Length: 190
Image (tube, rainbow, N blue to C red; front, side, top):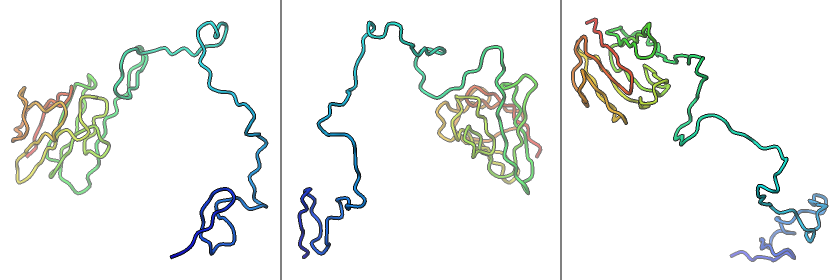
């Protein structure tokens, strides 16, 4: 059992040491020009009369409750469409998803053999970032042994196939898929 010593500043330390390791050494003493008895300014709360003539910060823009971070663009500018698709070397293309919900000219997304995850997360195979109603991992479409299967990944807003809320099932050529506020038309090659 080791014994302890008490320094003049009230620190306990191992008595095997020559001096207190918590107190600054004489050559490394932290000096301060502030006298502890000097009164310091305290936080002051002003009323409207105290602020007459002072510059004020004015916040303009959207009012109301904002639960999420959102980027607002001026009405005369169009927001850029930021949908991405991962490149899958060595995987055969087996189908497409086509949507006109994002831009009037339409966008298409390739489906590959194996698993295709659709969502707003950058790690998804098909990334739909501009639809706030799409979950991070919203829907999985699987192509295996000549058929397509889908599974809703416990998304917040669910998945509709041909107008019906569904959890999982088989996809057929021409089916309409709605996730969030985005509607896709499914096309199969196989």
